[in-house]
Image (cartoon, rainbow, N blue to C red; front, top):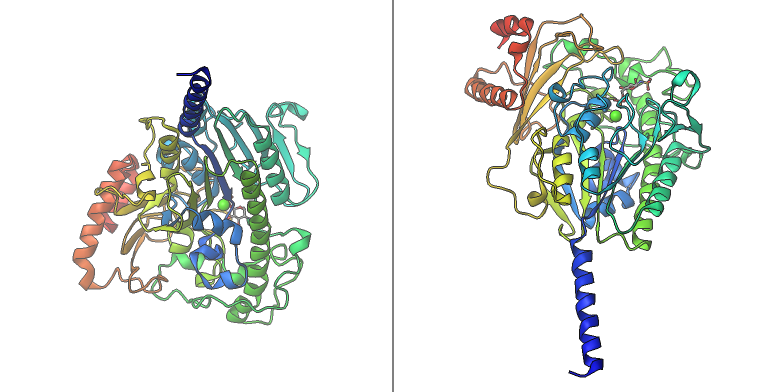
Amino acid sequence: MSTKKTFLFAGATLFAAGMAQAQDKAPNILFIMSDDHTSQAVSAYGGPLGKYLPTPNIDRIGNEGARMANCFVTNSISTPSRACIITGQYSQKNGVYTLADVLDRDHPTVARDLQKAGYQTAVIGKWHLGTEPAGFDYYNVLPGQGRYYNPLLIKKGDWDTGPGGRPKQTEYGGHSTDVIANDAISYLQSTDRDKPFFLMCHFKAPHRPWQPADRFKNLLEDVTIPEPANLLDTYESKGQYTGQLRMSMENMNTTDLKGRTMPENMTRDEKRHWAYQYYIKDYLRCIAGIDENVGRILKYLDEAGLTENTIVIYTGDQGFFLGEHGWFDKRLIYEECLRMPLLIRYPKEIKAGTVNSDIVMNLDFAPLFLDFAGVPLPSYMQGESFRNNLKGQTPGNWRKAMYYRYWMNDDNDHHVTAHYGIRTERYKLAYYYAQPLGIKGANQSSPEPEWELYDLQTDPSEMKNIYKDPANKKLITQLKKELLQLKEKYGDQDNKYPEMVELNKKYW
Ligand code: SGN
Ligand code: CA
């Protein structure tokens, strides 16, 4: 072999080795989550709102990857959902049941696990877990809910350097969605390209009171947005708990309505029509800001050559009512707030345009990230990786049902009754047990426990509770059996609470 040939051969070998190394490099994980962004307002999900406010940048993640049609939240409220995402555990295991709980700083999390595996880890934006973020090399987070305009953020190192040893907060000019995306892009620019990163980018928008950036304030001004068909629901077959709820269009306050006052002389239904238009437009204007900023982040990945080796996830911390049943907010087991939008792109592994209807949960996110990172599933996690499902290879024994529980009985905001239930591919069975059980933020007021059953195939809008129909007796027995199995599997049996044992004797 001539010297020249040897040199070329060695060069080619080195090049091949380099390629292999690049291919073997653990993928980056970019997790983008908005607060209260529901699938009805993501145009990839095909609802009527997409015509009025398309979300092309968010949709791009699903178009170039996968859209999960049935991703459900275990407890439809911010702090518990975020705790579930980061721990891979239900509330009864991670100790975060309600908005009043905090995540123990020493609790194991996916951030710690990825950090140990050599990832650069960061969280930016809404955190809402009360204690200082642990397992992150960098953080810059909103205190509590944070504010929309000129937000204050707490950066790593400043958790206890403020007055009285409290977090020192730094003000950033502009709208929170822009500020959070700017910081996320700066962080991405600062990462060491030889090591993978895990970035959680958490927008505050479109949370109540739905305040958009100035440039979107007049968007959709002269348009009438179509109403959901059940905006005027009168809850005929639903339980008495609906009477205590405070989350209807007619319950909106002047902050929600940007200084307007609900006209007194209107009927309930007139108020619903009237408030819906203001509500939905402000909500969609917030989404416009998120979509634009997701576009900026994706563009940065393209320009930096990071698109191929970065898993990008887009989701919301739970679903949300956009006027369905006349409601806003979440917390209930109904489809609109149970379903999370979930789009995932990873060009190396997920075929563009994949649509998958398997039942997955926020509980599964942490196991999925670890699977992609090549880290074995830790025993503390209760979820399962759905990496194979994304590849079109759903395991034969994949779950056909999920368990849900909202703990905060008669909460002070919207007075939602504590309940739990099971959602299968076709049915939903819910038990409004209405007990505080010593849970933080839960109140004593409790209507009689009651059950609901919906056939999602014939009644996707959950208008007709068929629990009392004698024809469903066998079905109910079967669903209750499955529900008990799930409660056992996740370590959430009612026998922990003597009052539940007594109650169940009468109502199960
Ligand atoms: C605030 C809102 C509620 C909302 C909770 C929880 N009221 O209290 O409407 O349900 O946050 O939201 S507000 O008048 O203060 O906006 S969550 O997304 O953090 O779970
Ligand atoms: Ca939320």
